[in-house]
Amino acid sequence: MFHPILLLLGFWYVLPAYVANGFAVFGKFIKSRHPIDRGRLLGDGQPLLGPGKTWEGFIIGFLSGVVIGLLQIVTAPFLLSIIVQYVYLPPELVPIVLMTIPLVILVALGALVGDLIGSFIKRRLLIARGRPAPLLDQLDFLIMAMLLGALITPIHWILAIFLLIVTPVLHLLANVIGYLLRLKQEPW
Image (cartoon, one colour):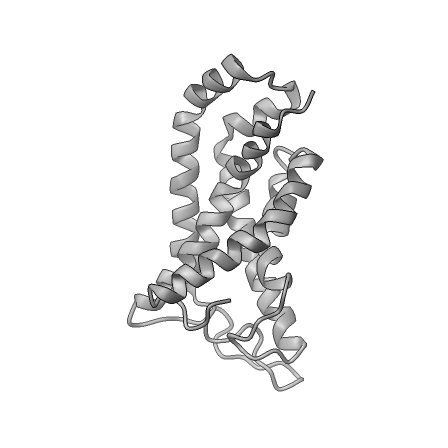
């Protein structure tokens, strides 16, 4: 039987993605920033990605996601022992709890690549930087994180659906908090 508490494993699996995506914003505090697209415009006259996507933010996000992932790897045996005391853990979910360095790297990297793809799509749709693109803004990082992570450890389909439903709400909440803390210019 699939216990509802096991849905928390979905968050565990994508925590490096959430952290990487959320911490990339701190790249804006570095004085000398280097846009990933180097200011290039495509044939449509729009930036490839835009000035908000910098190497500094990418590196800060990636390293933050990996650090969280390493902490997960260290604490995983303890978490696993607690879970199995109270809930039956289906064998296919054990690799999600244990995490691995390659999985952490791919999930964190996937989040950032997904965000870049989202920015590329927004520029092609002529959505100005900072303007909302519902669902694209909230799910681009998550989908790519799960896709790349699946190369190492596929996520259970129930966990994936759960994350696709709750992430837009959590993403909006995180953005409002970032806006109130003046880390973001828009609350979406």
